[in-house]
Amino acid sequence: MNIALIGAPGSGKGTQAAMLTQHYKVERISLGDILREEAENRTSLGEVVKKYMQKGVLAPDNIIQEVIGKKIDTNGFILDGFPRTIRQAQMLKKILDQKGTNLNKAIYLKVNQEVAVSRLSGRQICPKCSKLYHVVNMPPRIKGICDNCGSLLVVREDDKEDTVRKRWEVFMNQTHSVVDYYLKENKLLEIDASQDKDKVFKEITKILG
Ligand code: AP5
Ligand code: MG
Image (tube, rainbow, N blue to C red; front, side, top):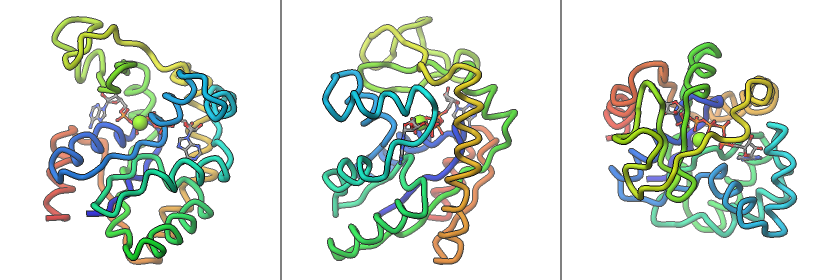
């Protein structure tokens, strides 16, 4: 099972990626989480990408290529947040061709801006295991503490109102074209991602089998 999740900030890519990875027992490749970890660990790559992430804009494709090339596993994967440009979609195709495999489906998690913004304004994240929460929709058992590992939950730096607006704009201007790319490739699956997370998951797995 080789799947890419495409969607605006707050569409639920990370949430669905976690559920699908468990269900299909495949590798999860979350570009945002990988880059945040690099930034947190102050690696040379992390120091470069941090500046882009703080502004809510995309990191350069050559950096993404370096990261993704090492991560793609031929035993199946769920991509979260990649590809985000046509160039990245072409990059993925080339990598998969070289490995003798291909992408099965690109799932477009469609939401409107209002839903996405309200989700991001309540999001909390575990800095250690990356588990996601929402103060209202998906609260942890103990307020502010990760159910999984007991770490103190944090709010992502790029969830500030202005940065969220910028990320939405970047999605519309640079990433939405990837939806059309996969439509032409006959790989697109569009899902109403404004529904409850379990309904979204059920719809995806019903179609994928
Ligand atoms: P990234 O971390 O991928 O951020 P994003 O695309 O903006 O998406 P989010 O993580 O904010 O939202 P999500 O869709 O994962 O939603 P979530 O499941 O958390 O990327 C960050 C940055 O890294 C980029 O801005 C860029 O700088 C860089 N980057 C990453 N990939 C790159 C690439 N390929 N190229 C270049 N640069 C790249 O859900 C949100 C909230 O809603 C949570 O609180 C959750 O609990 C809740 N929720 C989820 N689903 C539901 C539901 N169905 N109902 C109710 N609540 C829900
Ligand atoms: Mg995410």
